[in-house]
Length: 279
Image (cartoon, rainbow, N blue to C red):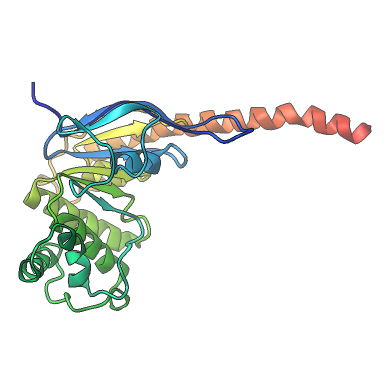
């Protein structure tokens, strides 16, 4: 049996502080991504998506369960995982090329090689000729291209993406989704992509895992079988609409459940408030 590239086994993350009940962000997450797979996690706000990515990135450790990369436990941050955040996190005093070279410096690669690799990835993300530009001279979409190039340049085993296009306008977001698919096909990287956008999840993912409301659990995993080369506008196709409706129904039930719980909590306090007013 082939070992998954990335695997989460019964992962739980909770937080505790003196005098307060335990806060469970995610619970019993079990899912695996194959070599070269584009796996998307979609869920409502507060479902623990970013917490999960922090765990895979090695920035925090699970309360229970384990996370494996090529069958080996992840115990901390490492250059075997590249991370692209919603905020570009570029160093403002470094050019686009120098930002891309940042991770390569940590690997001890020579200046000449770093320069060549950075230019290669600038070309890959469609920014050839912009290597000497500083972040303040680039648009939001261009900054995110640099961030993607920086994460790919040191050749990580897995690319982790935390809602990387959420801050962009709709047109730029769709353009970068196309660019990301092109880059994924060109590099064959395993990608774990986090989003709260249903359309984005379907458009990008080979599989889409739907997370529940907090604590986040895997509610269902949908293989996305759409021939992206058969239609001009995938998002308007019938299969795309069917997937959208199914995921929307799944997420709506989570949001309704959360709303009902909130209303029940508010209702339970109303008699106490009323009693207090009569004292």
